[in-house]
Image (cartoon, rainbow, N blue to C red; front, side):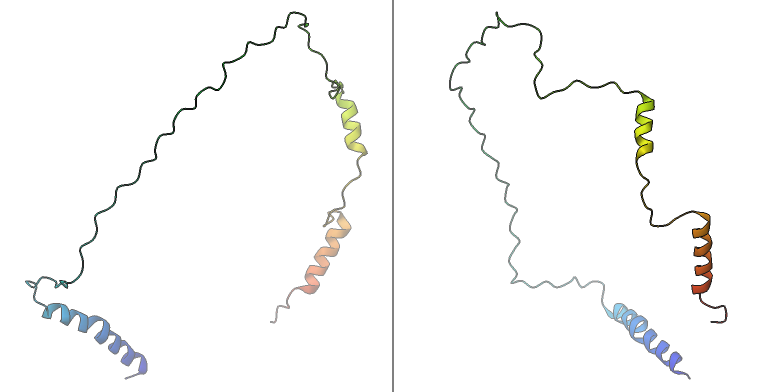
Length: 129
């Protein structure tokens, strides 16, 4: 008998057979016994409701709006604002082309790709290992 077989039998005995025998030995008529000295649980307390706030009283009666008899209906231009300029698509496209290209982390030209493939072959693990 090997050690694995012995461990398997011990597991079967302690965790399967003994609990099953203890369950058969108990009498089903006996109700579970609870200790008598434990206090009864307290009933739940009702939640406190917030008190309604009194409505604020108006302090002063509203004043009549100022008369606008002498004012013009046209809006005055504020000094902080400027009118928008009309720009055509050709002008915008020229500005976009004038920006220098960002330097990328990886180059995608033919020479860089070839160097990357060569270094990949050099640094990979040998087939024999």
